[in-house]
Amino acid sequence: MSRSMNDFKLRQAAKARGTSWHDTWKDTQGGFNPDVFKDLDDDTRQKLADYQIGPPVLRGDKMNIGKLFSIGHWSEGGDYGAPLPYGMNALVNASTEGQHGTNRGSVQNAVWEMGLANIGNKEQLKQFLDRTDALTAKHGNFLNDGWDPEDIMLYREKFEEPVPAAEPDVTTPVEPAVEVPEVVEQAPAPREPIEGVDYMTEEMQNIYDDMQNYNTGFKSEDWIAETSKPDYDSSEMAQALADRYKFEIRKDLQPSPQSAVNALTTAIPDKLGIYS
Image 1 (spheres, rainbow, N blue to C red):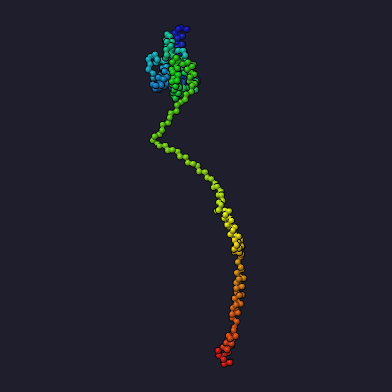
Image 2: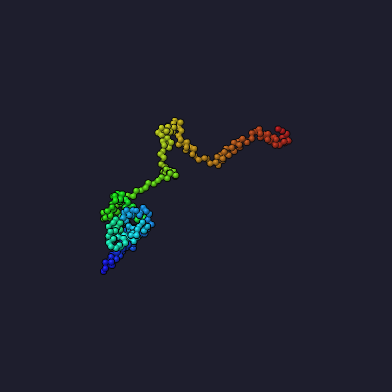
C-alpha cells in the first residue's frame, strides 16, 4: 500500500473518531446532544472554551481556513480535527486546542458522575457548567492541566444551593393573624343548696320549733287538719234551716184569745148585734 493511501485511511479514521459522537450520544453515558452547541451566547461559548468542554471549534466561532474543516470534531483521544497531511495533525494535537478536542471521554465521565444520564438540552448543559463554576470557586482552576480522574471525581460533590430570601411586598400591608379561641360548650355545674335559702339554718329551725310548742296551744298541724275538713252537705244545711224557720213561723202565727173574739164578731154581723 502506498504511503499516500495509508495516510488517507488514517485521516478517514481520525475524522470518524472526531465526528462519531454526533450519532451515538443517546447511547453513551454522559453523551452530548450536538444541538446544545448551536446558537450559544458569547458567555457560554467562553466557558466551554475555558473548561475544555465540547468540540473546540463550533459553528459561529471566528475561524480561519484551517478550522473550517474541524467544526464539530471532538474525539476521545488520538487525532483531533480534520485530517491533515504530512504529520500536521500531530502538531495540532500537541496544542491546547488539540487537547481540548481529545477529552470527550473524560468530560462524558464527569457528566455521569454528576448524576446526569447525558446532556440532552441546554438546561442540562447549563447545570453542568454551573457545577464546573462551583468546583472552580472551591478548588481553583482544577482543569488547568486537563481532565484527569481526580478532577472527574470532584463532580460527585453535593453543593448546598443557596435559597434566595423572599423580598417583602411593601405595597400590600400584612395584617397580623388573629387567633380566635375555640368556644367549647360546657355543661352547667350542678348548683349546691344554699343554707338559709334552700333549707333552714340551725337557728331558724330552733325558732320554728319554739313557735310550734308555744303555750297558746296553737299547732300548725291541727290548724291544717281543721281547715282541710270537707264542707257540710249543702242540702242537709238547707233542710235544717227550713225546719227551724217553719217551726218558729208556725209558732208566731198561733191566734191570741182576743184576736179570736174579734174575728168571730166581725165575721157574723147583725146576729148578736155586737160590732167591733
